[in-house]
Length: 199
Image 1 (cartoon, one colour):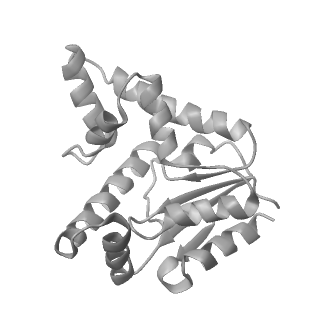
Image 2 (tube, rainbow, N blue to C red; image 1 turned 120 degrees about the vertical axis):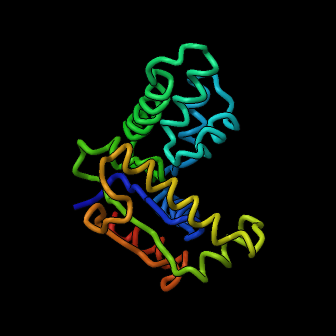
């Protein structure tokens, strides 16, 4: 069976975003990740920086942080309507992009948005700790002394976001069709394997 859509969840600094872009290039299809967040922010007339700050919420829950700050900003302090709207926007954006044809989605719990389809390849990319630390320093310019806590923070945030949207554990292997260790395979080989599954 040919998969028309590839959704990639990944540990921070495992190379999942680069793998997604390589897969898209190999299959000559678009790849979306951060762009989904940018489009949702635009629909709600919020700056990307503002939305990113919300994702840094101390509770670890993206939507809870959105609710807290947006309700304070508009003075309602009521229901989480702004948070729900932004989350709904992201789901709708993913579905709209999928209507345009085969696509790679990186993060944003895209598997949930496409859960009514049977042509979605769900991939999880992980890597060993040393690989991730080295990559975080090289790619993101992070200081080695602070990398471990940053890895933990981003992984927890992604896990919370996935749990909130999908109601499932982010690192549960049964949620995925394919699990790849980029520290063993390398970025290029991991992309080749995913692309081959879709041919």
